[in-house]
Image (cartoon, rainbow over all chains, first blue to last red; front, side, top):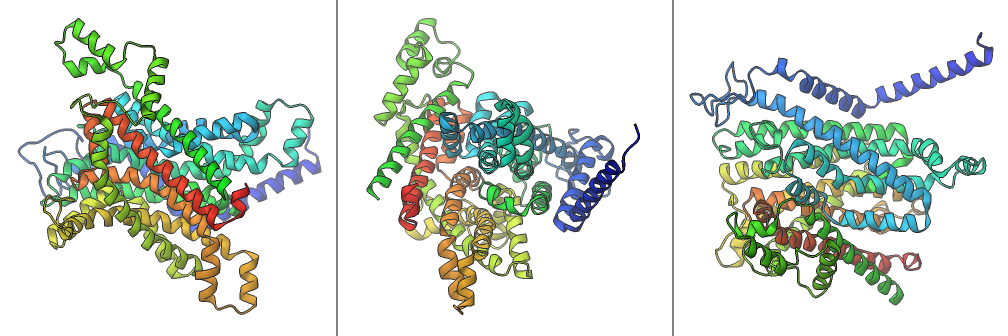
Length: 299
Length: 313
């Protein structure tokens, strides 16, 4: 079948719109810096075995707490392990936590929030009450108690942090859905007899996604901070597996003589959180300037 | 207004029952048998059974829940599995140092966060705005325990301005304040960054509204517009922000207490988690969540006092 003139025009218009969107993103300095930063972190985490100069867990008791040198750029820790290699491998844990927490809390929170916002009535009241009660628990405390309950493997930490952050996503999602529900196209979908689930999945969620994507980016940042906090308290992924949080905790004992260990690990966390926040702010500004109102309060 | 107060009180009661319920089921999710933990691995079957019966652990979960709810209503949250003392009393004794830290930290956070957010909003797009926002981004991005370590390293170890320990047994007000200063500053500044970001966006929204444009057109001085008209209209979102950050700062306070070896709820809960003292963890989690709910109810009352429209909603 050959394309008609109309088809070609429509395709051209879509391409133009895409080019305009790319230009808009490229012009936003925060977005560009954030995206590049995340890319760098991903490359570091994926290529850790090739990038790390030493094994992150091999101890060398003849060479403990060594100052920076040509073979150990950031020195060694109290077991003689190469700090730089531990930081490079630590990126794997942090990024996994960020990614999976967002995946879980975003899926669960989006569905809960969308159902609450769309259903109305007692379903909404019950879900909103549940969300509000869960929001009363400081999320870090909730994650702490859940990790204590489920043990400190990487999986259970991810699940614990995800459960702690799900009510936040759900609350944002609901507030966004409330602005979409009265719009004519939803009424039209109801009028042509679509089932509520179809309306939620096909029309509500796709239209509510932009603000939720912004929340997701920022949740990834807070999830990474939470995991670091758990690791710092000794409740995170256990040593010798390197995480940025436990590198800081282990460096704490020698902070006055070898401050570089804890300082550099903290900078890694801060770098990751900053680029994620820049990316989130950039997405918010570029996707929809109006959404500040919907997401701002809970970010 | 009386009706509004009654509604707030009713909401508070529902929320308190809700957090008790969540805390109960959360703690039951912890694997392991508390009776075995209390009596040790060599306990006889009979003594384990007696203890389970005494703690009500042999009853169906729903019956346990009902009993728990009833005793919680009387202010009884069970006894610590480790010390045998009343869990609530033990948690309660850890509240004063935590309350000091929370009040001092939140005061610093509000004192820095709100004015900085207002200034950034007024100077939107200028270097002042960029600088404040960069600072705030840094503040929310560095882990609070790491900021604590850096503060100890620089202000305490290198410059000797503050003690590295966040608490003291020395009597007197001055030593207490001196030891509290550094933890409160670290906690306060990390929360201030968050408050500044949200205050800025609340102010930007108000500054764009019509009544502000009218006031400008009528020649009301800019200082009066910003600090009187706009800030008052932005006060509800800003108070809401303070309510949201309070829960968050309680989470951060656990980490700050750990860094500065300060006694308080955080370190009590942490010790209880490590000792698998689930009654104590449960009581601690409940008290913290109740604090958040109480503050939010207070804020609701304040909103009602500020904005009469909300009393009808």
